[in-house]
Every structure is written in structure tokens, then in C-alpha cells.
Amino acid sequence: MNARLTARDWLRERRKVITILQPGSDAPPNGDQLAPTSGHRVLRRRLTRVRRAPRKFRRPPLTLLSLSEAEPGSSRPPWLVDPEITHTPIWLSRLPSSFEGLKIVHLTDIHHSLFTPLEEVERVVHLANRLEPDIVALTGDYVTFSHAYIRPAARALGKLRARCGVYAVLGNHDFQVDPDQITQALRGHHIRVLRNAHHPLRVENKTLWLVGVDDLWWNSDDLSGALRAVPAREPKILLCHNPLGIWEASSHEIDLVLSGHTHGGQVRLPGIRSWYRSKLGERFVEGWNQLHKTQIYVSRGIGKVVVPIRVSCPAEIAVLRLRRARTPARQ
Ligand SMILES: [Fe+2]
Image (cartoon, rainbow, N blue to C red; front, side, top):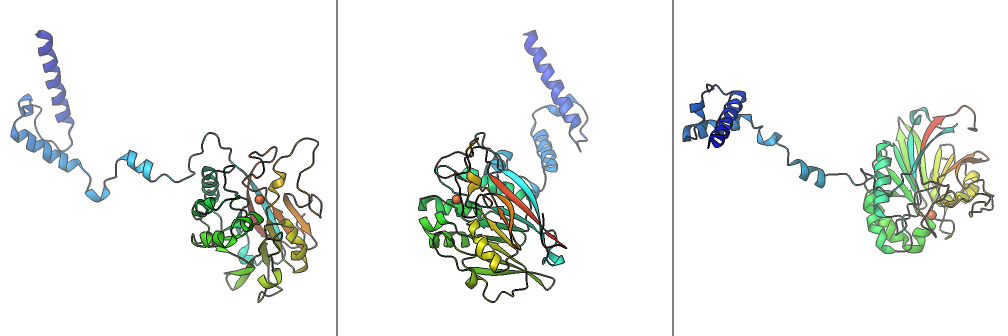
């Protein structure tokens, strides 16, 4: 009995303290005020009303907010290894000063499929957006084998953000699946697909031309057509899935080619050379290179084909910074 009374007293004292601490309360710290009378209930309701923020500033419950508005790819699944983010300056002698420092994020060979699940694509998009690109260049092979992957891949890539836009060309796997459906899906998400076409980027009356061609293996490329009405003297960047496009690009005075296709070899075992061979040797399997006055960057890309692994050849998000060169060659 005594113990129950003691507990009741303790509760009463605790309520007193709470009442004293309530902001704006001018009620005296008197135990009588705490009696559950209707007057006290009105006072408490009024105090509660004063403390609450106006309705427009109130936040939804935290759990709902975090579950419903979390950006896809913002957290990395434990089984996923992030791509390597590489940084390469590209020195161009014809680059107008107004484009100095332009940041291109180059993604290629996404290959959304069982081997490259959607979480991986969303993660890449998230990482690319964090780099705050001026341009995103996509150089083909968005899906492998199936139409079922087209819409999810396009939806994920549609979340890419770049100040001057997102530009794309198709790769050999896109032609194998359905080039028109992939084009339509990407365009539906505000990605500019350059199919033997060009797009001028203009800053302060100066122009940098983005040119894109269809895939070489499918004999669909038409660089001459893509360059129609593009002034020969102005700088041009060519998006071309297959790095062998540099052969023709160099004869059309293209300044820079961005390519993929090789996956950097994808599986590189000690003592065994890359399975990718080109008629120009292994020179254009990955990274920066040059043919005559035309430079090229070949990214290792994101996805996997044939086997669901990469060995000694991590996926890559390439960040290219355009710089104005005084001499034609960079290295
Ligand atoms: Fe590929």
C-alpha cells in the first residue's frame, strides 16, 4: 500500500516538473493545477497548439519520407562493387576558350541484363550525377539480348543530369535487340540520340559540335552524313560505339572520339592478352590514344557480356576535362 502511494506521489511530482518546463506556461507549480479537471485539459490543449509549427512547415513522418523519396542508387547494395572513376584531361588545339574546362562524363556498355542488374545501373547513374557533369556521353550497348531490359534501362538513364544535356549513340547489341525501340525509349527520357546526326553546343557565339554515328559492325554508320552542314574548321567530338571509328574520324578532322565496345578486355588473366583484338592492335582497347590529329578515349564501360564477371578490369566511369592546347597533341 505504502509502495503504491509512493509511486503515485512520484508520478505527481514528475507531472509538476513537466508543467514547469512547458514554454509559455505561467501556471504556478502547484500540484492542484495538475488535477485532471476540464480547465486543465483546455490549458494543455492551448499550450500544445502554441508549440506546434504552422501546418505548411510540418514535415511528414520521417519513416515515410525516407522510404518514399530515397534516390535510387544512393545506397550501394553490399554485393555491388562501384566502378572506378577515372579523370583524364583532353587537350584540344581547336577548343574555343568558352569551352575551357568542360566536364564530360562518359558512360558506355551498360548492358542491362541478368549480368548487370538494375541496381547496378541506378548506382552508376547516381555516381555520375554526383560528378556534376556539363555533358553526359553514352556510347551504346544499353541492353543485352532482350527487349525486356529496354524500358528499365532507359528509365534509369533518364535520371542522368547534365548542364548541357545527355547525348547517346547505339552499339552493336542495341542493333541486335531493337535499335528503334531503344532510340524511342531513350528519347522518351530526354536523352538526345545522335543517329548519324550532329548537335551544336553554343557558348558566346562559339560552337562545339557533338556528332554521333550508328554502329560500324552493322554497317549503319554514316559519318559523312552526320557531318553534313558542320563547318570543317570547327571543333568536333564524335560519339562512336566502336573505337575502330577513329580510322574514318581521323580523315574527317574529328578532334576527339569517345568509344566503348571493348569492355577494356573485361577478363584479363595473367600472361594472356585481352580477348579483344582490333585490326589496329590493342592500341584502342582502353584509355586515351591518338591517330594522326584525332584523339580517342575508350572507356572500359559498366556491364558484362558472355561471362558475368570482370577480372583485373574494373568497370569505369570516365570523367574527361576539355582543355585548350597550344600544341596539337596532348602526350
Ligand atoms: Fe558492349
